[in-house]
Length: 248
View 1 (tube, rainbow, N blue to C red):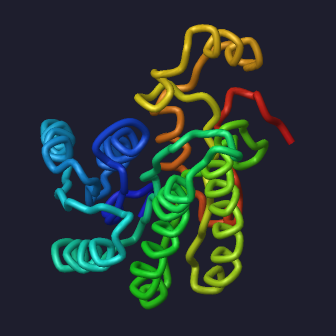
View 2: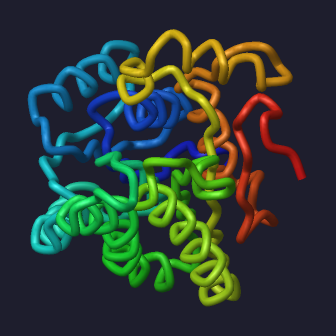
């Protein structure tokens, strides 16, 4: 079976940005996609876009900050599609503040959504992957999990932790033909980055060797590769999608 055709993919944060792009690209490549996010209306719009050219998807309202919603959501997805072959842990939030002023609630909220949720989702799907002896888990981390970022101690810590989680789980399940990888985007044009000042955007652009901002599709195509049959010998990897701003 080439690529991802016929596989079932669960994508969190699929209502917009990188998650939406991942869902669209996977569906266009022949996967059946479980669309997960908090905003059901936006998810239905994505499902409609996928259906238009003949793709297959289904909507599952899920707040990944809730362990119960993760468990019930994965159960509903397996009941609907019969299995989960590919997990894309994309959902994430920011609550930026200098560390000396950061509230504990902002730390907890970001860690729960950006790190604990991928752990719980991995737990929820890994049993069926082990049974079928095939699976792909792709965690969306960030360049800031690799180099840090002032004002984002919570976000950078969660994304760095996600890299550690990726490598640890990759070692645990490799013997069952399950790969676990991470994609680390640099500056990608999304709703999350659109709020940055023009001055900050200009300064960041100067540091990108490729001379352009990344798109959500740049990330989605990397995810599709790691989810594919062709990437079967790649595991525990952090694939940088950053235009060359961080190398090595």
